[in-house]
Length: 340
Image (tube, rainbow, N blue to C red; front, side, top):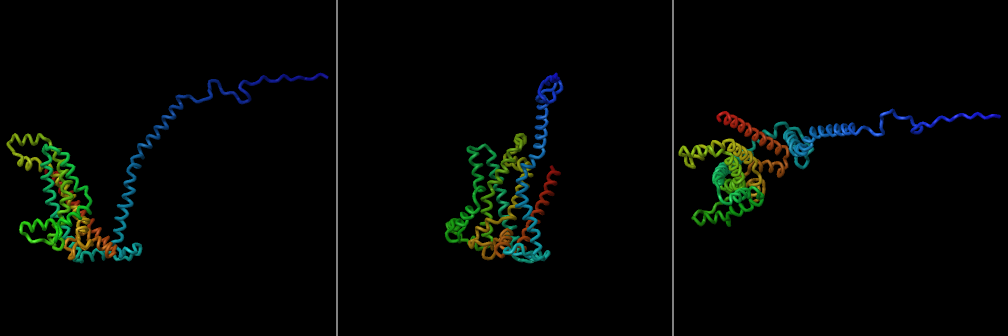
């Protein structure tokens, strides 16, 4: 019996898988891959340029929310309640009673008057001395860098260390100031027990710490004044004093306004100097509250008497005072710009 032999089909080139169309290759075009990679990098670069600035500044806003905005809102809410430091979550609504109580409190007005007088006694001599020191440093002196660094040494000194030294200097029985006064025939002064001497002593600490700082601010502003103005004034026959009055001071008006405002704000928040100067190391500002400032009064109400609601009302009152100072600064600045 004859057998039928079927002829096998020729094998397909490339195996059993269907063949690729002509002109195609196993890998994509290198130029296409490079374009995709560049487009991907471009999108990533655009996202980075758009969002990275927010990432860089986000730590500041997080810290501000935690330590700035939240305490501000919480103290504002607590100022409308009766709340004690021992139970900060147990609040009883009292409305504006905390504000009316502090305005009827003689100790509050005493602290406000002390803050005003200490601010005047410390700010005026401080800025005048800073202006004079800056005017001297503005000339070409030997070792001028050393003098400029020395001006910042008091500012870099701890308040506690500075107050300790000044307590020893103004000691009633063994202080160096009273020793010098006794040497010239003046009776010793109770610097911590009397009102005006104690405020002068506290102001001297502030003057010592901040004069050099303000002097460097004035010096930087003086060095930005064009020398052509001084040369023109010299050609007109003006001496150095006349140049200072008619050239330097008018050019420093914005800087002077800035230092006055900053010093005023700092004076309204004085706390460490009177606290450490007190012989009893308390927040009363002396036995008769003779140098108690608003900062000490706030601390006494909140952390000594533990009246957190009243302390919050005092804090918001001080904040309102700073807003008023800022408004006055804005008005004066606009008038100075208009006049110039």
